[in-house]
Length: 580
Image (cartoon, rainbow, N blue to C red; front, side, top):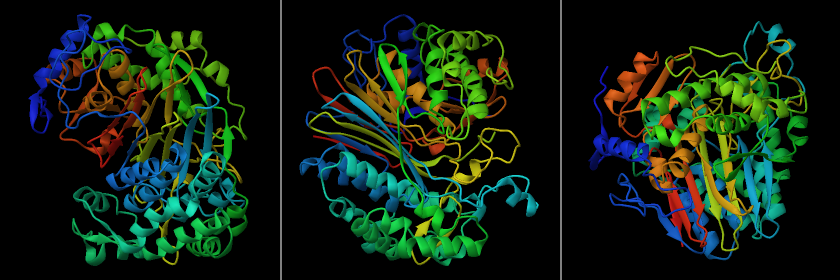
């Protein structure tokens, strides 16, 4: 195994510089969360040296966006410059991402969001996940001799909720016409958008389950469209035009719905037209937890947001700042906390309409302090049992976007097909790739996440938002990455609040991803000596070279106390940030 340290960025700064930051932070030199932060190879107000970044922090005073593709960020920026608000910008970006990152998200997927309403100081949470169809019972699978919900194909398709989420969010908080906001997405689908090297590579790596219709579009002649060529999906453009004109009825009823459900039925799935027609978005109260002077907000179940808050609460039991970023003790503590939080998550994250989830017990600080005390500083645990009486190794094909407008409204939005190209099924007349979120149901009798008609599956999607001590907006943060989402978000927030990094530096700093059991993937910018020490503690170390999507693709917008907005985007994917 090659444990040699890599470079902090492709063009600068050996890993020794990150090690130097570890030593500085361990000595108490990290900047506090509310002090000046530096993103260059220079001293901040405390004298701490920060590693250089691939990209600069992007700053502005009137508005900011960050999205999983430059064309989406550009669309959101244009909306803000034309006087639209943060929700308007978010819907424009969501539409573009549904076209230009077709393997990760789309109108055939789900969405979740948090919205900070500046006028009232309230945070609203949107659950845009779809439900299983009326025919979706364990008996349906048993009659076909199926012991586990398939990971792709027609039986993995639950109702797509993204379109309803777009329309409902815009109707409640937007200010601009739906057709105007979806126009960029329609144009890119109809006229084409330039294929990036990254997209061409992603299409190849995500193409294993594609049906013939999808292969004809995304792998013509057996190869992906060459970088720089234009990729068009005119059938999807027509579907988006119908949505722009007719709203939810344009997708969940009428011709589009009839085509999708006839296709799914012919393929052997359980969705029918009444299942789509019955779909509704759910507005819920966000879950809240405290961390280092901030109020952290996430979505409640059926998402894994409970694991995120558990991680923040358990982290309070450790002096992470003294340990230093990237130290053996720091990484070991976070990895072991993750196993405890995920054990509870896998037991309890399900649709609360079908399961009495003990949220108060799961988020109780006394309970979580006891859980944190289970971390053995000298040994890695192979597995943990839930503390309150799994399907977790997913590819995390998701996009995240965020916007803050001139009035102070903020959106944290995430949408996904789940696996690469979701179910692998593209319906040719609509151009829609259907997600496979239904694959996260199980068939275990008595389990909270067992499949049932009208039930929403467990979801990895977990957008986040933080409020300052006075209740005003502080920052948005989110990332693709399936199981890595709570892990990445904890690491990024720690970089920000404990180690004084800027948003861009916090996102670019090397990350780990813990899998089931003892396996942990580390970016190659961690010092080899630290990885050797982690192996001695029992961790199975897997070094991943380069800037890869394994560790997500985070975006952040932070509002300083003087009102300055700082936007950041992750070079691990195609993300881009713009501020003005």
